[in-house]
Length: 491
Image (cartoon, rainbow, N blue to C red; front, side, top):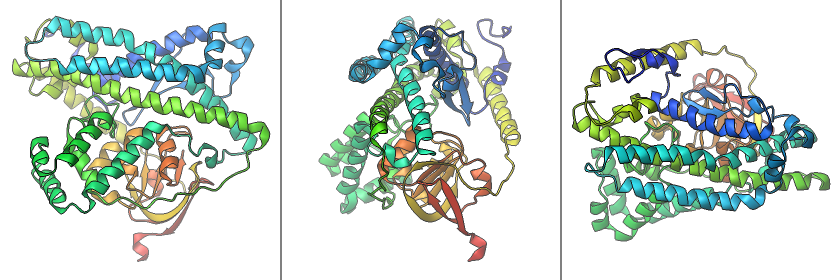
């Protein structure tokens, strides 16, 4: 990019044209950097040429492109095509997974503690140095999960061929215990307030006034206050759009979590139809389930890593805002990483630059929305992801952000959405089913649906165009079919 004459250290004001137009520049810049670093290092282990397009963006969400490694068909999983180093890692994957989890948790815990010590008096250069060190260390924690994902995709393809369409019940109990722990904690919180009218009234008043205080909650019910604080400390980074740095997490903004906590949960099924696996395939099914544990764990670590990064960047944003360089601390997400590293202090006036980028990104988003309007087809089907069947009304969402803004409409409904990230866990607890236009059977949210006991169908092309709000449908997550029963006009 050309340098801007008004801001000589910065890329030009047209920087927004280089981004997807759906997420802030800093998010996309960092995602591309982190994933590219991991991919480039891993491709050397594969003895493959440099990879093109290691990351794909869809509706502002990043997906690393395993197809770039040609792993989906297992071509590079043959011994004579792989390096010795990769084969050894591949064979020791189950034994290495707990070590990865422990080391990554320690790394992120230490980083979180550093962020909590940041004050207005903290050194600008020292904070920059800590952030640079984070980017040097972080990629080393994600090579193993990427190797594991290669295994997961390969085994999924293998079992898909063996069963002529992967039966969703192969993956029962495959979710990581961390997800189960979160679900149990959510239900414990719900039970604690179910018959506690004073607390429910107070939490509702917090939502109405958009003001919440743990001190005030503690005066009303100390035990519940501790339960909520512990939950947000452990699980508060897991939320819709969690991999967008500009997203406020539940840890940072509990009001949004309170809305979910007080909404009515759906009654989920608890049984799943069993399918004979056959002796020959049991080994591969066991391997696939064990690889899911690492997938869920690494996903969890990733959202916590983004929470740490958000804390770092907000510190810079607060300093720039206090100096009058930007309007609000969240404007920091409209810089790029190199620009932040190029700043020596909170001097300068970047308000015009930020406004220009906001406008350009908004305009680009409008163009994307018009350009990606799909054609309508009548064929409603997809990939079976969770072996349950439900009948219910449809709610069509544009994005995960749309899910939070329409929270009161989602309870007991079948959600239709372009893409679904793992941060939808709180929303899915209220739903009766999930239909996604783009994704795979080993997506984290697909795992979550199987754990919750709700039907899910993935890769249902143009589902958001074919289905409309309040239509009544039958979704079969075992066969991957979607049957229209009635429309609102039929009433």
